[in-house]
Amino acid sequence: MLKRILALTKKEFIHLRNDWWLPAFMLFGGVLELMAVGWATARPISNLPLMVLDHDRSAASRSLVISLENTETFTLEAMVDDFQTIEDALERGQISAAIIIPPDYAEEMAASDGNPTLSMILNGAESVPATAALRAAEGVIASLNEKLIIKRLKLSPDEFSGFAPRLRVWFNEALSEALYTTPAEMGLMLEFTTLLFAALAFSRERELGTLEQLLVMPFSSLEIIIGKAIPVIVIAFTDFVLMLSMVHFVFKVPIRGSLPLLFILAFGYLLVELGKGMVLSVISKSQMQAFLLVLLFGMTDFMFTGYAAPVESMPQALQFVANIVPAHHWLEILRGILLKGAGMDVLWPHVAALAVLGTFIMTFSLRFVRKALD
Image (cartoon, rainbow, N blue to C red; front, side, top):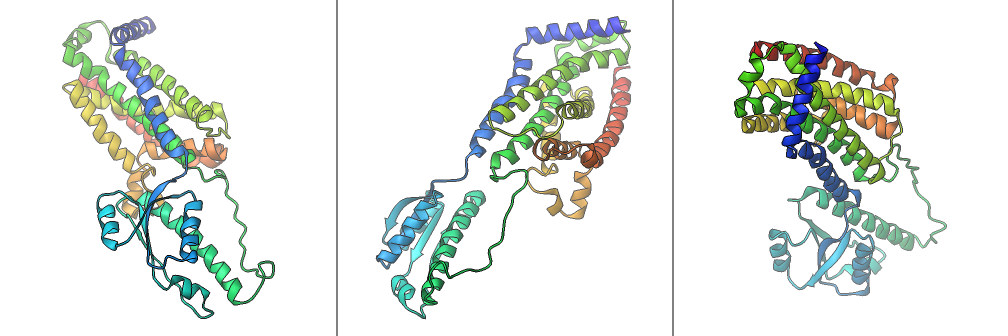
């Protein structure tokens, strides 16, 4: 049996050597996408285009604009003379925010009982930049408000003290977006890689017309499945090691937990996705159909992993669905080991869930694929 499995595995590797683009795409496609995502999210949001409509044109209004620029979140796009220019720029997506300073701004700031106001317009069509712009503007306004209170109370800055919370961030001290997105992207790319490679195992043979030849050979269905699975596991695990090396050495994502534990759990997760991919492979009539099914299942999983939206904020019914998606538990395990240094004492609920789901998926997959091949 072992010789027959090794012969099938050798045949698969020879076929992959001839179709070298497939393993190359599996290995480096995910790595390149991960690199693009990491670079896009590694830096904080900055240089958002800002328009200012200054009706006041005073030293106070200029100081406000300079304070906004000093946050480095904004880049002054233009000082305009009418609101229509701002409206046109927002509709065309040319700016992320606009500040409208009323004509009595400096006067209200200087008066002891003044009530200075500002208007800020955000481009809500792009929610992430809009949120960053709002936080930066709120910080500038809070600083101005504090100075105004000190001035009106006729206190020195040393005499003024208020509520001063002590904030401490664990696991991601700089609140780097890359430390959140790159591990999640790595987990999802591993899923897509394994699913796609496994889904092409039998659909490629069927499309090339060689599946019937394979089935009439003196191999059992189990031997064929194992022979097909070994190259998938080898290449997918190699891809995982490459992506893990990139996120650690290039994007400085820490590995605070046990690396052997991570490799063991990654191998187990690969088996789960392999089982799903094999089922897609035997029901697909062509490679294109297999590819489309992988996209369908992969994107469905993506919505329930917690990457796009926290699972905790979903309705109860959707939270239940998320808990039966293996990729959700895999991302929790991956982030837990990399960022938190968590061990089995913390991760065991997700590991147990992944084991139960994996046992069910692998059992169903083996029975379904063997029945399809017999």
